[in-house]
Image: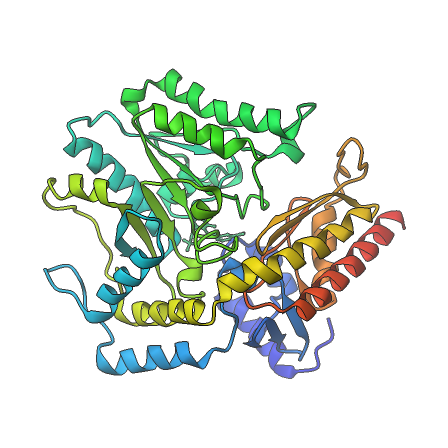
Length: 454
Ligand code: PXG
């Protein structure tokens, strides 16, 4: 790539010589050099070559209120001057963390009024695992240790997070999962539904939970964790029959239900939480990303009152992080939630931009490469196939990666998960920007098709 800006090369040299990037092939990245993103505003990014890019992924599913909001920078700066750090370990607290816990309780589902803060979503899920086991031990049922999760779910990259997740390529590195975590099939009809109708498949996939509980014995199962909609797995929206059947199963057996809201939380579906969207009643909800719109790292675990009542009887919970409830992160999160509420951003997603995005995206169904378009709120997925009728994929072509590269080159960030293209733009995206996104997506699908035919 020829470079207009000599600094691009300098930064790429720094990358090659000093940086190990997450989820990357180190050697390949050294050869190619990363694209350098230098600044951002609203839904747009700029790279060091001056290219303007529409960010169809809100960073990494997180920049809910869009880039460049001075209010968050001001909140951080004010808090840094007043109290940049103090811990919450030794029976101390500070105003921002307490006010944030209250603000989250106000928007969380009824009966979920306590929050344990962490530095990330992964740490939130590590906290969950330890809290679930501690909870059952206090109740005199220490054998209820197993957490049931789902194949191709994503719950983070720490040892517990990656174990809870169902990504086999992550398990392969580092001898995961750790004991006590088992996975059931995911409700991915397009990829795995075979000849079943979506509704039949949804029931089948949900029934796998009951079968697993019975196989393991309910006295050994502590919790079931799931994303309301799988994000990193490919924006997998369960058939309508799935969650109602899961709710019936959860009501039958004495296990905890954990909704991982790291992607669905804070408005992505047009409701505050994915659990609100599907009418779920979780005992715990993992949060991160949209909590601070990604402006600063923060995660947490929201816990139902009945669970807290049990934990209250258990003495010390021997768990926490230096940065649990960091005051600067808490101040930024508070300001982010204030903006989401006062500017009625989620209401606008629900009433206006989500229906518009979903309608416009579905227009891509007529494209020869597209096997399915699905979406909810401001989440969308486009399945790339060779044969629309049989849902057969192109084999060995890496179609998703080809399409992703065309997107990058044409000023659009759209992610590829295998041959599934996914989008999750900032919640503040306008209808005009949605038009631009869909126009660019169609152009990149055309370019991908031409590349496959040449
Ligand atoms: N749960 C869910 C549902 C997530 O999506 C995490 C937990 C972990 O959060 P932290 O803050 O520890 O990263 C996530 C994170 C991708 C991708 O490729 C997605 C995530 C992270 C990195 C990459 O889509 N989600």
